[in-house]
Length: 231
Image 1 (cartoon, rainbow, N blue to C red):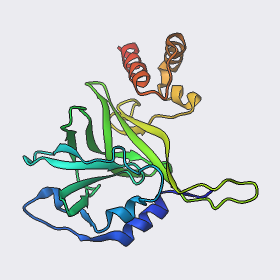
Image 2: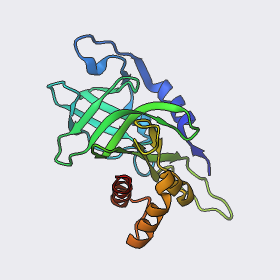
Image 3: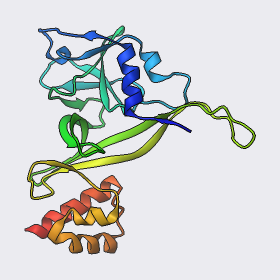
């Protein structure tokens, strides 16, 4: 079973995107890329979807008064905006965006520079999970596209599908590097080491409260406790 990650997906995007859109009277479209064939991008014959939510969600983008309709592609970590029924763009990740969903969910996304899996600094739009005077916690949902399997004597035939991967969390102001955004490690040893001199206290708190370091609600409790111990 072959897994096509960002390299393959970027190649697909290159083949279906049109020219760069430069519209001076709408800052949302400056540097954006227009989609020519959304159905080809989504591999409509595959099981599942590359999107966090399939439908477009009404949202406020930056200070633009007009309501836009957006959806998050979790395979290539990009945000699509439906400008008109026949016009969809992908926001330029190098620009700064603040997106507030208007569907009652209160979800908010913002442009963040963070380290990728190879420790290279990249900029993309992440979901803001928790924000206060001490830190900001971000979440990146992930999916991959798995190509179909023909099947054989010992293997079952399977269609192409989109498969969920564990989300990755990032936080600012956790380390002594102040506002720099760092990835929250998934391995427990590395996770507790993130809290440096307070790692033992945090570890005891997690064990005592039976918290899961990969769960969003528990992660917020842990980081809040960490800052309480620092006072």
